[in-house]
Image (cartoon, rainbow, N blue to C red; front, side):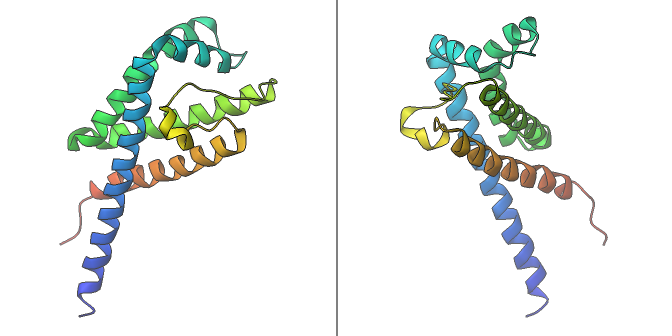
Length: 159
């Protein structure tokens, strides 16, 4: 039976990676759909969180494009051929969101409303910085696990 242990462990890691990927798909899908349905209120909230050092043209392009990029990330995470790219983009977006939150807080924003999710998913978008940072840290760990898993899954195994 000890020979079955590595197979069982590998299967468990694979299932965990799959669950993490599905969690990211759900988060990015919910976020993108909310932003698209409530587009103008999302734009207003997002503009208030843009760090002052951001070039205006970059914000002008990035803010309206973000929901479409998030939807694309969700699709990429589902399609096997594009999973690694989707997980890398998800990791980058989550990192950028975290930097924006910290910057907005450092520039005097006390209540942070990103306008990024459905009211019944308020736990995904609480308006307290420490909770938002904890959420992002957890999602960054999940995304990193998926990125690492995709890299390992694509590495050829010795026979």
